[in-house]
Length: 356
Image (cartoon, rainbow, N blue to C red; front, side, top):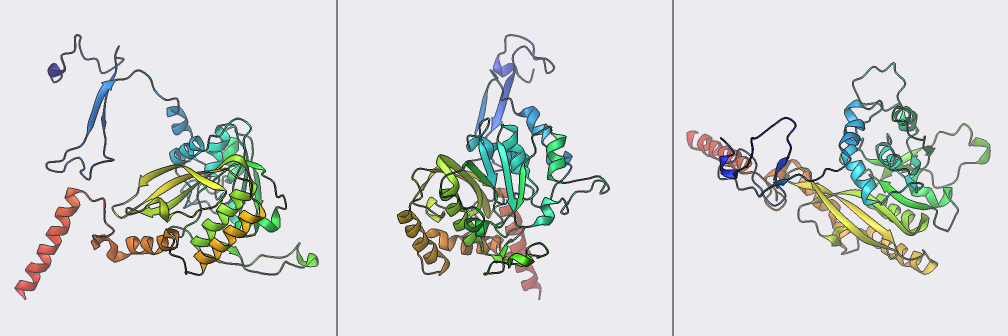
């Protein structure tokens, strides 16, 4: 009787229906949430004629069931989306310069990619950064994750993204895709090698590299440089970057050889979200383009640039500060319930003042 208004010609069967209908609620264009008074959320209702084939894969690669995870392991669903946006195909040669626990490489390997991962922290590559609650006597590392999914093992190299020019000498494109989640300092900061001079040959076998802070601006600029140099023409760079809600495309770093192809937003809180940025290499990385980019990079790092990317870090620091939740300039996505809680808190403050 609850569905009489739909005028279905037959009975409603919840189990094994002959025709399946679905209702979608679209929260992307609304600040209202279920339970709010007077909430108005766009709805879409229709017949299911087909389903995507990734439901079983999402369950299979669930982080909660994975042998080896760390505090910053990327969500498995988002990693699969990034692989799809990167146009990964069977035999694609890909690498992640900030591989961590290898969450992105697992998704790339699922689509048939030949994977390589770099990281400056050898501990995470050896499986010493496990952050789960499982039995720690079980062998847990990136290779064990791949074995548990019956995926080809990746190549893992302890390497510094800041010094890729020193490590990799090729001037021609090698990789089809670079897919990564750079460390931008919200949950974990980045590190780079701390020595300016190369280690002497006789000390390389027992040398323990020193590291220093790797500023997020420098991380992103080095990443674009690596993409321009090591991607083949038509290759794609996909990366994640945190953003505020007043974000614009001008806030992203640019490179003369790369062009933005896709830009997808994921809201994370009332004050900030993150974007998946997909760029495509259109031009060879000639000496002229490299000189042009070095000038741009030096301007950004010297804080003498009016480019939006030079100001993005300041916007994020303001949005994520303790006082940011009360700043109407950064809070752009807030529910009616949160507004009421804020108003109630202000009334309590006024009552205390009047009672004194």
